Amino acid sequence: MVEDTLVISDSRRFSSMVALNAVSTLAQIGQFALGTMLLPIALETKKVSPEVIGFTSAALWLGMMAGLLAAGQFTRWLGYRNTVIAGLLMSITSFVLLPYINWQ
Image 1: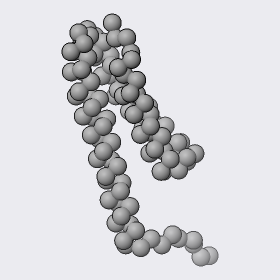
Image 2: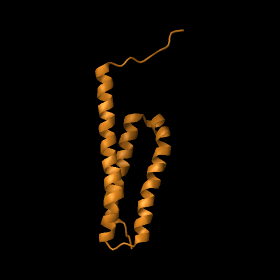
Image 3: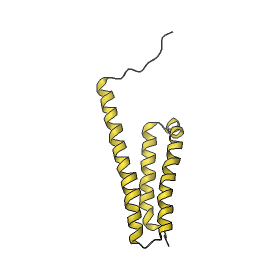
Image 4: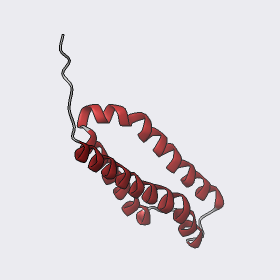
């Protein structure tokens, strides 16, 4: 029995690895730097209580965990590219809506 295998050229494989690492780097900067480092500082400047800042920081990690748990299913439904785009759009939407939340 002959197996169907996908043959990928070395240049295509290399460009795929570069793209994956670039997207991962940008995601790490966006999620960790903006969310976990700058958001608590921004909330502190708005005189938000430490409890709310802690809750918000924990919610970011909870959201990342939920995303990791759901990523496999989303990848099967949407494919790799659309899953990454959907995650990016959700992150952007979250950061855009943050200034409109009543933190008090």
